Amino acid sequence: MSDRGKNSGGKFPKWIFLLIFVGLSPGIGMFIDFALIFPPSAEAHGHGMPIFCILMPLIAIGLSVICLLIAGVRKASEMIAYRGKHYEYLKIFWQGNDMLSPVLTLHEIDLDAGRCSVRCIQVYRSRYVECFVNHGVYTPVPPVQSVNGPFQQRAFVTVRREFEETWNSRRYLGPLM
Image (tube, rainbow, N blue to C red; front, side, top):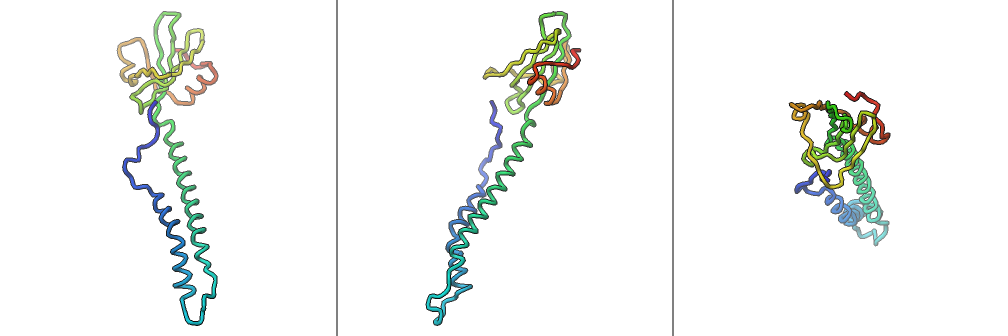
């Protein structure tokens, strides 16, 4: 099968900034507490609670969790948007007189793997349906323009929904010619 993920290719990981922020947050909190809110003075004698020393790491961790959740949702939406775009669904009608050969073949073609057929459905004249899953033996399927050549066949690009309905129900109710 093909690698369906995107190649990150040397991009700088953005999560490194979150780690730096979480790591530096106690120091940032101490700076806010002792330099801005409770500056050292002769009268203070160590009074005052270091609020930001405690709050800054919690705020940093909370912001990190929010950023990671947003990144996760974004990545999931990209994967959902990418799913199905690297597949093509082809419907090939065979115009032969042989009663034992299929009259219709539906292919699910993985475009990222060199136009290899991942799943195939064969429909016979009696509307008997055979479904095949590719288990490592990849068969490249030519594009529609090449199939619609001098042979006794007509090819069309179809939609995923039609392929999935036929695959799941094991019935083909559409036209056979």
